[in-house]
Image 1 (cartoon, each protein chain N blue to C red):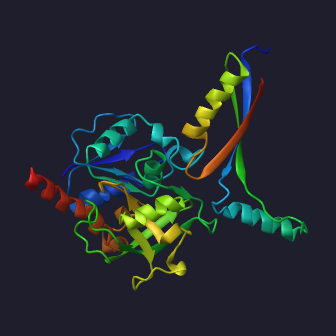
Image 2: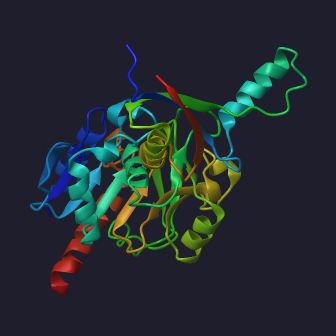
Image 3: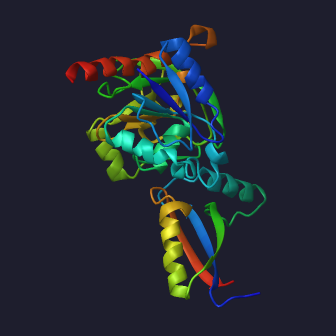
Length: 235
Length: 87
């Protein structure tokens, strides 16, 4: 499966993603500069973390207008798997490809820590290999990760099972203490209606080997391979 | 040098009333520590100035409203107001 990692000026998680896919998954991957517009050679896209365009105005607000984003939108609308990590999640919400928004952490602090998240939806290409209730240990590193959506949107996301990842304690319980940023309903990640576009604040690409503290992130990144096989066998 | 068509929009963007504003809470607590006990609430927003050309004030306002909806504010979480003056 051929991965693209989209790089914007100010991205800093792009090389982490590149390494995770090369070394952790052993799959072909390319960094794609934000001015490129042809994504036809790729099977899935990763929008990495960082501070695209310095997070000016709002995190993700300017990146959304990068030339590559029209192609990202077309790729997503065609059902291609897209994963937005951290700043990538912020960009996807600003672009309207995912619902809600990411606000300043309730603590007002940049939160840099290992957290536990529970997989609450196994129907996305990025969680297909994981049973609902699976608990993953992943790092977070963000100042603006407090998930917000209005009441109607939140109710709809919960009803449709579109909360993909939720901050929990080590035993899988949703508690205020396990919520690192004040996200509504402890939401760490959501998907679009179709389920092919997923965004999350934690960094699976920074947890692909026990040498760097953990390898649970690989379970998210590798799920898409199984999804790819499933898609290929259907066609 | 001023032109008949030169306008400046002063745009104020802030989180919607229902959205928790931890920055505002922190500033409120700071004001309380300075002795301003009469302060009940603080909300922190953003002030943006935009210089533009438009045939008249109404046209300038229409353009600025569009800019607010599309970029200057995020309608999911923020509200905005602005006024247009001659530049």
